[in-house]
Length: 127
Image 1 (cartoon, one colour):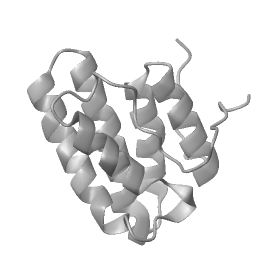
Image 2 (cartoon, one colour):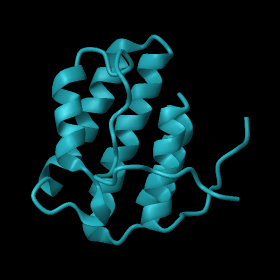
Image 3 (cartoon, one colour):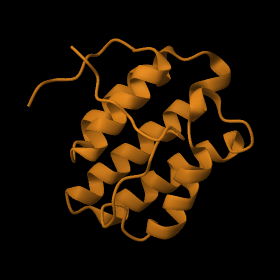
Image 4 (cartoon, one colour):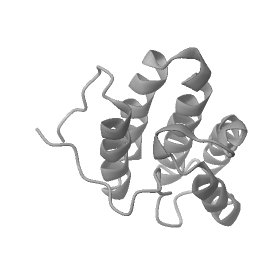
């Protein structure tokens, strides 16, 4: 599999690329893309990006059979996202991720991954 870039991407590109990775079953790679954004984000957005990264790494644990670890990580990620539900930046669908969590909290890998943005379609990162 092709490695993901370690440098942060612009927010819209980060979200589209992470979504394409999630949709392809590569939750850990999506986590890495979001982690780069988290580490480079301005202070007011760090918890948001960290929360998204934790949701993805939680899905990774579920995919690998570590359901207890998955639930803990997804729960932590969701708690980081909650403060942004009212006015999420960058078109991030915080409310949608929270609703996805409410439906899939017991097994984060049992359903389709959450949609990260309110956009109708997310495009894979172009080379």
